[in-house]
Length: 166
View: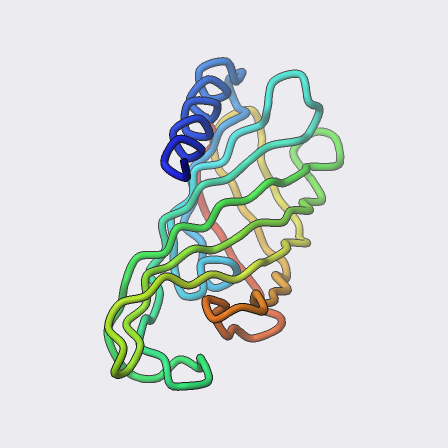
């Protein structure tokens, strides 16, 4: 059943991407923030929904944790952050507000691989024209889930992004 939900979500995202107007899509490299360390993101506006959009990222995440979930020296793994966001403002200058969930496979000491997640929000500035350079900077507060899969993360992380709109 879970795989069906993911397939339907992916199909809806592909449909949105195909119908997005020029300049309403972008790719960017993000440092810190929801990516935890570094990540690449695809972001698109949903047609007919004003400034509402979504983002899908692929992030490099430190995966070794201790018994209380804090990052320790170890290996790296890929994380998959997903987000909904809203751009307020006109022209090239926007207030960006968003929320999402970062999913990751972690190597837990003595327990092997396990799935983990945390929730995040974004509040920041975005410079994005109809095409060309994209710049983002802001704060990303986060919290972990209350179950055994919740990942410890600092409460507030700044973020900085550079990319390209098309």
